Length: 83
Image 1 (tube, rainbow, N blue to C red):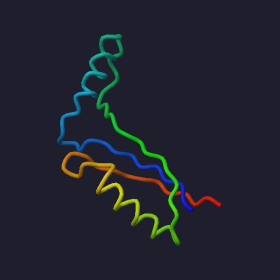
Image 2: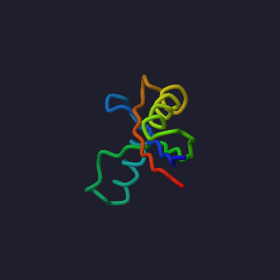
Image 3: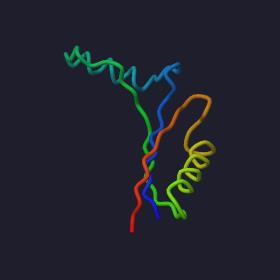
């Protein structure tokens, strides 16, 4: 079994309105040194697989088909074997 964390974010070419609002609020708080904010989603789950490579293939399939919109979002993940 493997513990998985999938990170999903907008592609660089896609406007992230939530991030823009947060960046504006931070500036209104008087903090000028903050920029390039990205808001994303994180998914944690455990998956059964025979190997790390098998787990990664399953995670790619799940992420491509369900967790991320490939037209607007990218994803990355970490996989850790658990006993």
